[in-house]
Image (tube, rainbow, N blue to C red; front, side):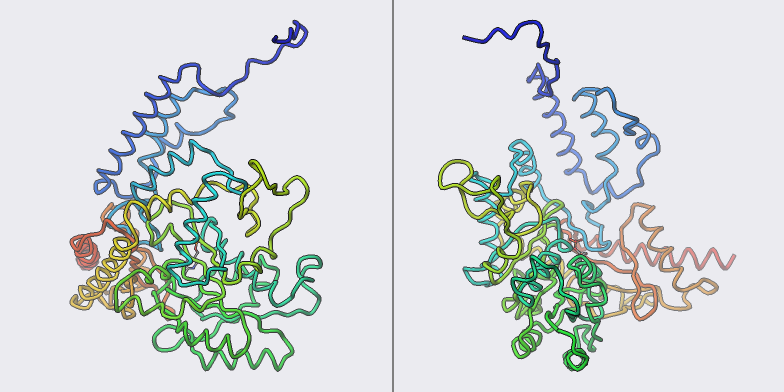
Length: 494
Ligand SMILES: Cc1ncc(COP(=O)(O)O)c(C=O)c1O
């Protein structure tokens, strides 16, 4: 018998679900159509800056009153969807950004519908993440007791890994008391290490300067003799070396550290070996000669890498993999009574991923990775990675064949660094010229290359982590640079 609540308990009429699910279904179908139209025509949709009218149309302006799903969906389609960051386009080579894929798009719809909190407990999402971690463990030949956790990206994965390395060197006192006075822990990485590693040292309480920047050798990898000297100097100064950080794919030039060499030093000196393989780790799936660039990655104590870069999964999803799963769990697991696992029911299940990182509430990132692996398989994904390296090598050849351009560093994997040669456009600052060329190409919607500094000079940089790129896209990009150089030269002569 329903209880008579009486008139003195007037509940607010406040609900979010629609009264008409058919209208919702229709709106979502239209939205999916718009998304698929967008993706299937993505070649005609290079980056363009957000239109002022669209920015105005999407301003929240207090948002006291809702406008309903139908209008909200229309606003997303008209005013947000067209103004992406361009990384879905076949001629996007800026920074290191992945393209996304259709299987992961499908997974995002399912994951959003389920709205699972994947901190732990007994439900499908935990099992899917476990499968993804198991797959990665096999790919990188980590032992069965290794653990892993999906995080926002390599930056967060590096924080996770350094926290475990810190726990290894400090032992149990680490968690309760924090960093002891005078601990003076030092880590070592090549001078071309990504800034995310130094940020991670800061977040781990060590300070950015705890990461010693070791000079590189002629191949762009860490110089092992200089590394030994840097460690000796810290030992002599009574500091505590605890961690080596190898780079598998440097962000500027795509250089690779000698990971076997680093693993040997780590073993000899009893140091933790962490590998930053944000994009380069996936050469593990590539064909030779590129696969060998990551030889030794299987000897790391921890690895950070991204699915959202060179595995083409939608943002954001990175991976922290740790050889010693128990140490990993001990570093983070804290289960007060309200989080205790149970033998039966929803509070059962293992592992609880919240025990392997700082996030308690976690989204279902694993499904888009799982769907990508399931739909395409690692063989095809590895071939796309290989093809990207072939395309980068081709870009390098086109640069070398061009009188106006200069290849700044050998193309080792998927990164091609080049510049308009000095003096080609007389009367123009050579560094400013590179920046101008990059911006003009972007604004014309022709291609996206970014800029960086190599040996104190500004250079153009293309990192190909793009499953849509064809050889013609590489040709058009190099041609676009050359055309601009010719146009600047002509304009300055007038
Ligand atoms: C070598 C390297 N390490 C770390 C990062 C940071 O990764 P994320 O942006 O996923 O945090 C990047 C990003 O480009 C990178 O290239």
